[in-house]
Amino acid sequence: MELDKIEKISLKDFGQRLAALLHTKNGGYNSITELIDDFWDYNGFCPDNKAVLLGFASLQQLLKSKEMFEFLKFLKKNF
Image (tube, rainbow, N blue to C red; front, side, top):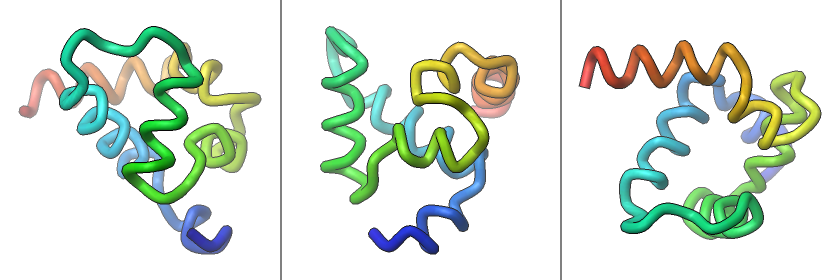
């Protein structure tokens, strides 16, 4: 996926894509690398790069962030 298309994906859309992927994986992920690889295969772009474009140091930092926590609370409440 081209960089300009990745830049247009909002934090909300990114979180929805991540949540959809996590929901499909029975047994969860054994590593952040496995999650990144599956996300990239499924969505066509590197989630670590997108996390950096959103202002985080890495996907791992994004996953631990207040923004992601608030988004997951929203998903749980509304879906």
